[in-house]
Image (tube, rainbow, N blue to C red):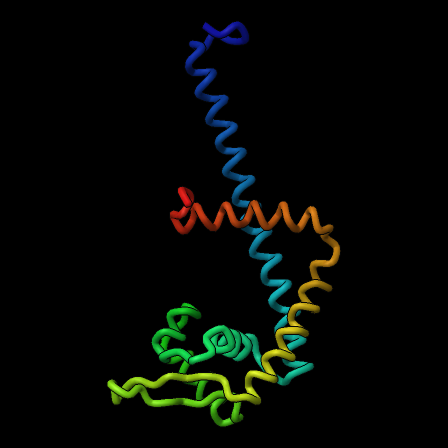
Length: 170
């Protein structure tokens, strides 16, 4: 029996664990909602700045970023996979970037149906300007965090990402 009640000690302990488990669950739920809100606010600010300063969109920026990292270009299917969007979504963005002269489509030698897309020189130059501005915007948006706070938050979020991706053992 528990000293504080007539309940068996195991029941009191179970209730305590259950209550602390519920509290932790609520805290994690609030954390998830806070992460979503923070992400939405940052993304909204970046979207608006891209529109105002470059007459561009975040999806266009993301496509250009992926192609900037892959200097030789990417197959359309690989680009879709990297961005985690459908081929149809990427095709529309690529069509507009091609018409703007920022990327080119190049046929794959051994596959008539496949195309590689890559940035043109002007696309590469524009992306470099956009990326520099993007970095300054994010720095401004998150400027209220000290370097130490940002480092701790990054470590915590990285640990969460590793667990979610099943890479905790790495």
